[in-house]
Length: 311
Image 1 (cartoon, helix red, strand yellow):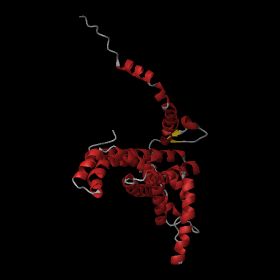
Image 2 (cartoon, one colour):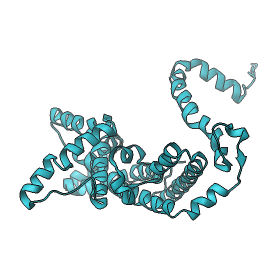
Image 3 (cartoon, rainbow, N blue to C red):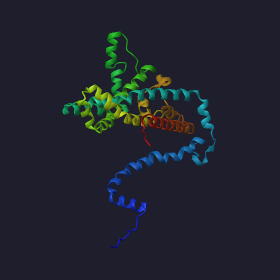
Image 4 (cartoon, rainbow, N blue to C red):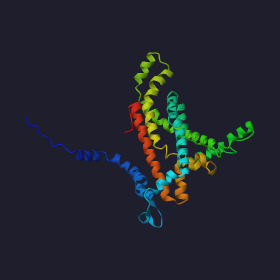
């Protein structure tokens, strides 16, 4: 009996065979990859502006090299460090609430047995995610503005309204609760998917042992969601420096610059408002490097504490 040895195909041949059989699925990636390349990778070629005294009329090639001068200016400008501190404080406040809160909301939503009610609740909490920050600002201004509904109630009780949009501390409060309202519902989708992946036999065994709903949640559901929580925290830490630009730009005004101006809005004003492109690019690059460091640290501690990491 003869055995015919078929030639073993190389990894490249296997890849192209697989791609040929699933090309329709990969075709859906093309629009996303094009957007990613156009708006994320292509701008990286302009990073060199951070090391030049860029003048639009001279172009990148004709502008004078200044080396690390723009980065030295970052460390010499007190306003940069004030903005950096504001960015950290605002984003860390939002992360501290907006990362764990969806987990508890998902646990509560999962306990709703009436499907029509459950679908209605899901729709109501998911819907704000699709509103732009300009729309969210309009809603919150009509609620918390000087003549807003909530301020009218406060004025009727205390005799004077609260200036939510012009006082630094109250303005940060508005930023946090608007982030909760807009983003928490959408984030519950991830946790609901994780809950659905928990083995039902574990709950059945707990019920047989007499565990109440509270104990099932405490000893089964929450521990099972910790890896997902760590993943969400790691991803969110990537935006602890760069996040919040759209929201703050839509909400803030000059009266709250001292407590609400963040790196993103500062770069916008320097680059677009004052045409200081080189310094704005240097601050943006500094922002990206610090953000990467936060992601790496978060990923490291996630591996140490939960045994899982993003990569």
